[in-house]
Amino acid sequence: MEYNLADLFESVVDVVPDREALVYIDHPGTGAERRLTYAQLDAAANRIAHHLIDSGIRPGEHLGLHLYNGIEYLQTVLGCLKARVVPVNVNYRYVEDELVYLYRDADLVALVFDAEFTGRVAVALPRTEKLRHLVRVGAPPEGAPDVPAIPFAEAEASGSPERGFPARSADDLFIIYTGGTTGMPKGVMWRQEDLFFSGLGGGSPTGEPVKKPEEIAERVAAGGDGITFFPTPPLMHGTSTLTAFIGFNFGQRVVVHRKFVPEEVLRTIEKERVTSMSLVGDAMVRPLIDALVGPMKGTDCSSMFSVSSSGAVLSETVREQFLALVPNVMLLNNFGSSESGFNGTATADSGPDTGFRVRVNARTQVVDPVTHEPVAPGDVGRVAQRGHVPLGYYNDPQKTAETFFRKGDERWVLLGDMATVDEEGVVTVLGRGSQCINTGGEKVYPEEVEQALKAHPDVYDALVAGVPDTKWGNHVAAVVQLREGAARPSLNDIQAHCRARLAGYKIPRQLVLTDRIQRSPSGKADYRWARAVAAEGAAAGGAAGAAAGGAAGGE
Image 1 (cartoon, rainbow, N blue to C red):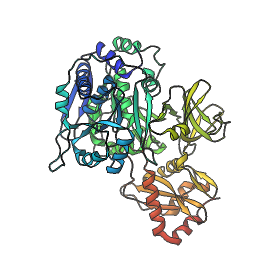
Image 2: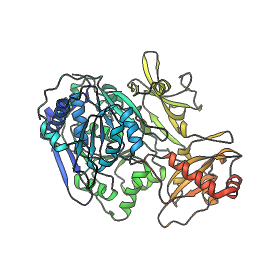
Image 3: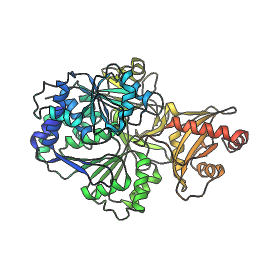
């Protein structure tokens, strides 16, 4: 047996077939839900796997998952892994041109999509020549264009519920497309063994990795149940799908919602006795706080012992507010990426005054991006990870050469995050190099300024972007969403608040108030949007706005 995700899942099924594996809760307020045991989920995945094989999809070919959260999503991922077909996540927010790019870049030959997206699929289909097999989940909306797709229920019914698959390999691929904050999405190619150790904690995210694949089933057989994992972001983002697989590797229950609705999330925590929840940064935790002090006040969250955030910074203010409401929980502010899996967890003193400080694992270092040698304490470098790292970016040899390298006998990945390291090995993450703002020769990382802004009592959410400036090259602009009912702050108010936490050159010289900060469905920052809003605000503000910002600026 190898470290293959389908093999590991089947080994768990064989020891706890009757244990509940997956609970799906549909649209808020409908009360509709489905529950599958491990044996039922295994059989359902076998059916889809056999359907794909019978439809001529070959091992190594790519299938796109253009779906909301649901049974069908995880069932199809498992079916792909069983059939050695490569699953590829598709961002369901993408419109025609973005979909065409991803479908073509990923060389998709098959697609499983929600009926709601029929119109977009129909428009993209003529431009994606390799896409030859489509499966539709649900009934298409009235008036939707005709798409040659097989209904999911029909596809499922056509496949055998038995296994009977050829031998698999630890080298079988799992591709995670990451949209990032700039540019077109890139497909991160993971060997399943590498993903198991870097993204799934080697079967034990909080302890020592297993030493042989058989240990997964042995541990499940020897232990009990009682843990419920609740990945709340969309499964189309790697962190949620990996959370589900962590749950499966423990032989425990996984709960998913179709969409993130704070009140429904809290109802599910109470009803299902959720013990471990994952989410993404302030954008997901803050609405939970609002619900807990508002309509869902008194919700019983006592079952939860851990809440983990990754993919976006969880600010100090939000952490304190959440822990005041749910004091029994261990709140983990994790750091990682689609290219590295898990790198480490933020320290307790991480915040706007100290920076985003992370105690990293033994495989993570801060290195010089040119020499790849470790930087001296206090010097700025880039975060890198060695060992179980991806093979590269699919269909992008140039980006692969820029991001992945070999050093000695080990493979390394060079992440986009700039950072320093102290004498004790604690890493302070400054921010993505691609988002760095050069203002008057000084470098400003948006995440640091955003943490300071979100500590302001009237600020609900914020993004920071650089705007071209004739004097400074670029100036720091704050795009801010205020709390409901908050007084409208002036630029001087915001600058005075930030001055106690940031060096003068980092203080925003422009303030743009917006009704709502735009983020991805998982809560990740949309910096392209922020830059456009800030640039539009600067143009509307004219010379007076620029002068006011400059006068309050740097040292």
